[in-house]
Image 1 (cartoon, one colour):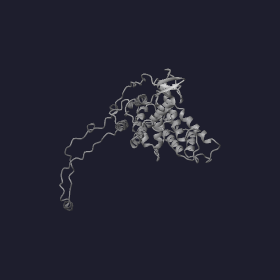
Image 2: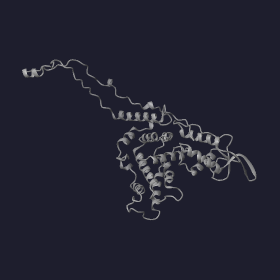
Image 3: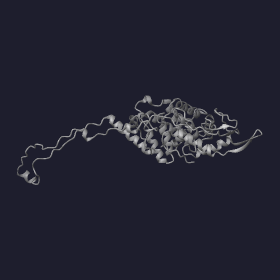
Image 4: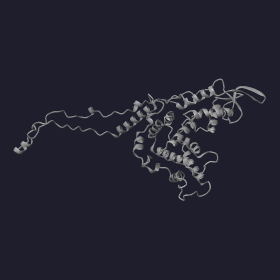
Length: 390
């Protein structure tokens, strides 16, 4: 199912409204009999899960990684927001289950209004580039020249050279470009590049340019190792040593621990839980609340793989360097675990790849004000990052 939502402001809200409209318009409704009564235009809960699950998986904004469990969670939110109701007209609680209870659509399902936010135009950060008029250029004119005394030999050697006045060689002493100007140029060029990638006339509602720190962009470009991972000068911003050791252990399994083997049965699961607890503790995700809307817009480019990769690379340059380093190390560990055939299952019921996505998605991307599609959108972005990590 192709989404009609293009990049632009409030994309998460638009996707929510589009999903509701599609669900209401295309979900098959039938006549069902329950407790000796016949009910028209309704569906079993399990039928709703089946149909909506296929819809989400076929939508490139959510992708094939969407689980049945996540679909049930979305239907819980539908019930809470009166997108659906049970056959007795009850709604408002998240008690939807994947079973044979009957549900129907109310006469109208509420669509979410778009929030009102102050806009910040990209032109606010356009720097003033150096201009030749800013410099004091000497006026042209004759320059006195000391007479040259030539003997006969010199004369014959230089017989073809006209001796006399020579034009002045004017040297312009330009002022050094200030660091502030350099930073503004980086900021302006990055914003213009993002606007071009997204195909937008303006970044209004997508990115508040006043929250963008050009120092982060410059640092992320110049302070990296051979693998492209950020190098932090301030070691206080680094991951704790015990977290780094735990991540290396699982990323390089079974050769990651100092003993080159697990200490006891279930050792790898305990190490994984330790890492998960650390990353789930902070309230703000690694991609930060400020850039939530920007990364949501990137989801619209993921069908064109190279465009999506390029857009993500640019957007990640906006992050604080410590966030970008943590993100890089986390995605690397997740990818290696997901592709490591020697890694034992880290969960009894969930495959390692899906476990990585479900565990860390909201640590990487979520909104400050809870958005109903947060989990699905984060799943899509993180799975793409894992698939194309280099």
